[in-house]
Length: 94
Image (cartoon, rainbow, N blue to C red; front, top):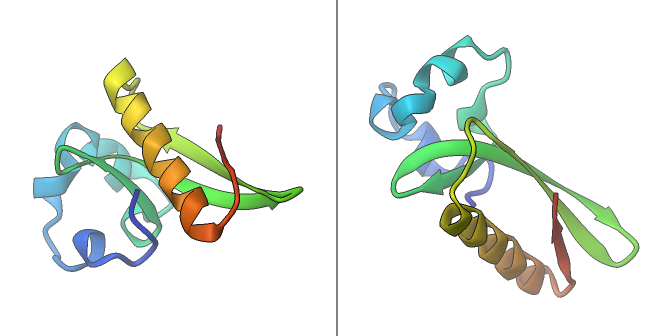
């Protein structure tokens, strides 16, 4: 999970190297995923995330472009938990 405006997503004009299979969806989207919070797995953009706060916890809403494997979902869940630790509160991935 990378923050918005991270250099990995905005540092290059040609982003095909990180877009992978999601490139058509990202280009067709009205939202510029590259400027937002990115979910990167194995160097490829697989989705986006955003956070909200709810009663002492951070809620991480993940939007992926395709179904993730169990291992990939677990990796995103671990990243969300590390983000919660950074904020000093529990994290809930939705």
